[in-house]
Image 1 (tube, rainbow over the protein chains, first blue to last red):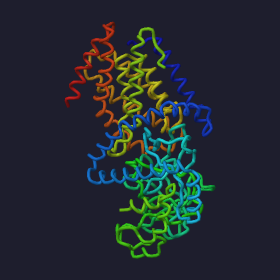
Image 2 (spheres, chains in turn cyan, yellow):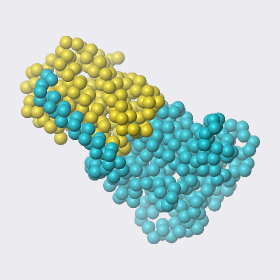
Image 3 (cartoon, rainbow over the protein chains, first blue to last red):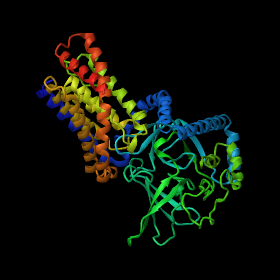
Image 4 (tube, rainbow over the protein chains, first blue to last red):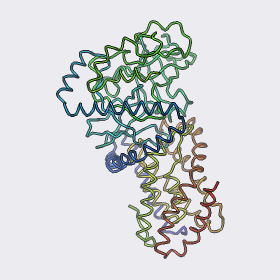
Length: 341
Length: 198
């Protein structure tokens, strides 16, 4: 087709429309008038994505199995089992709400990471520079914006937008994500920020950066991080494991110290996750952290830890108190104790 | 959806729409979740726009690019300023449509167009992000992503272009009126045959 006058007119009109959209959406910010458009997108494409995710899931599993056969297979099996269990928990929770509520109250008094969750699957992922995923639960399942999303291993991110049957999650590795967090067994707080594209922005295994607000506070490699909890428990509930300090930048006279964090969650192969629909009644502190790994790095000062550290492998006996929560709407602690390998 | 020129039969609009919707869905639910090295994924939507523009010309390229970009801006996991992809894909559709005229003479045009389109698309998208002060489009991230993105796009392009030609070619065959289009389509088919044999 030739570059006719008509073609140029159409090009000009559409470019102007695009620029107008950008301007309106950019200036509107969080409450831009084009939010409705995103709502339409969620309503139209959400169900399609759910269907296509169900269709392509076996293909994805096969590909995963091929890329990292033994480990992935084991992980897939574990997730499958976990998924099954979560589904059953969800179903029973839905069927008998009053009983679940009673159990939940029971749980609340028992404390210890009693998050109330909705299990979900990742059905699609974002494009370009953003680190976002879509979940197959939405407002119909009680999911609202600014809820914490976690996997069996640790923090995943927070819900930013909710459609009728889908929810968009901003991953903790995204550049625009920052999470208030706390070093284990100390009260030292800081901010965990993403480094973009699941770590590609800053390099492989440490897709997050932790800024310790007190530059003089002790921090060592191998220390773990949990979420501090936001005001009103939104968007982040307290006590969710985030990751482990992998490398510490030498301070150069700044006000903060920076460390690079290896997350517990594998952001590259997210599948089954949970949306925390109700925060715990009491801050679980370090109770949800997985058991200490055997010995990734020699550090003699391991002992003063809130969680029972020794116990070479298998479940630490201290976790027995969390067990009852397994029966109710689902605390992540039993699953994390299983996942830490 | 596609603002149709009279020269295009309804079948073509429908076909282009179907191609774009399929590309979008595959993009978010399959391609973006592939565990590829570097966590960069081929941009199937961009490739589909380029292919449509090469087959049908710049007018279809513009409209298809705009529609696909707008859809990519609002499809659920998207979290950037609405209109960025619409702007970028619209331009890419126009430029690749102009290249379509050259296609009869140069058999290498489709591959050059795909590579150039991939490069221009990624860079333009990053540029719009920088202009809007998007912290995600930092230079460090962009400079590392662009080469891999272009590489993946070029690797994926024979498959996408071939699929688009397969779909649109069948349509062309059915209504038999597109005499003028027969030459590039045949040329394309030969190209894609060679491409998939690599």
